[in-house]
Image (cartoon, rainbow, N blue to C red; front, side, top):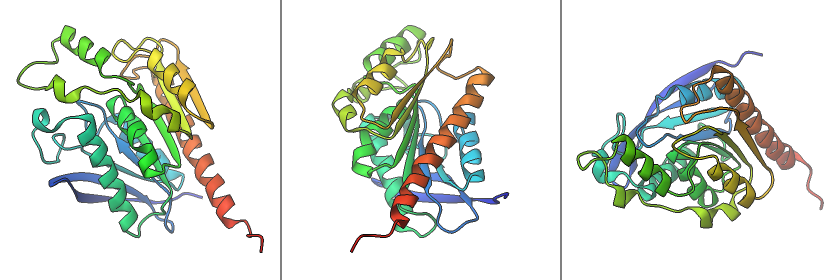
Amino acid sequence: MKINTIIKKISFDSDGFLLKGFLHLPEINQPPVVVGSHGLFSSSSSPKQTELARKCAAQGIAFFRFDHRGCGASEGVFKDVTSLEARCSDLVNAVKMLRAGNNTKNQIGLFGSSLGGAVCLSAANELSADAIVVFAAPVRSKTIIETLKRTGEINGASFDKKRFWFDISDKLSNIRNVLIFQGDADNLVPAANAREIYQMARRPKRLILQNQGDHLMSDKKHQHQFIKESVFWYRNLFDRITTTENQPKMV
C-alpha cells in the first residue's frame, strides 16, 4: 500500500536560536520519527539526508531534518556557534519539540552524518534513542582538524578549532541499536573510528564497511546500500518495540 507524505516546515527554539527544518510526515496515525543531524559544513538539504527522509516516509516512518545553528536557514554565525555541545543541544531540543507535539509517536530514531554522527552518539543516551544510524562518525575531532588544516578549510575567518575540540569515546559503551556505515577509503574520518564505535557499543549493532568508499559516499551502489539498510534498520527496531508494547501483560 502506497503511503502519502506531507512535508511540513517547522521552526523551533534552541538556546535562543531559531532553527528551521522540514518534517516528512507519512499520512498515518502517529508514526515513529527519525531526527537527522547533518555534517560540519552541510545542512538539512544534503542529498543523503533528503533521500533517506523520503524513503523512510514511504515506509511509514516520519523524518525530521533541520539546520543546526549557524547553518542553512537557521539563526547564528557559523564560527561563533559551532561546537559539538551546541549541536547536541540542537538535537535534544529538536526531539523535545517533536515529543511535545502530537504528529509522531515517542519512538525516536537518530541519523547522523560525519560530525552529525558524533552528535547522535553523544546525545543518544539522554534521548533514549530506539534506533541509530551513523555514517563516517568521528570519535575524536583531532584527525578532522588536522585534515582540514592541510586542505585549507580551517582559517581564522570561518572556523574556531578550539571550540570544535571533542572526544566522545566515553559515550560509546552506552550505545546500542546502532548501524554504523563507513567508507574504508575515507581520508577525513578514518575507518578506525567506525571499528572503535562498533567494538565499544552494545548489541544490537552492525558495522558496514563500504569497499573504497569515500567521505562523501560518492559511489551510487554505496548510496543505494545505505538507504536500503538504514530504512530496514529503523523499520525492524521500531516494529520490535511496537510488538513488545502490544503484547498482553501478565496479571
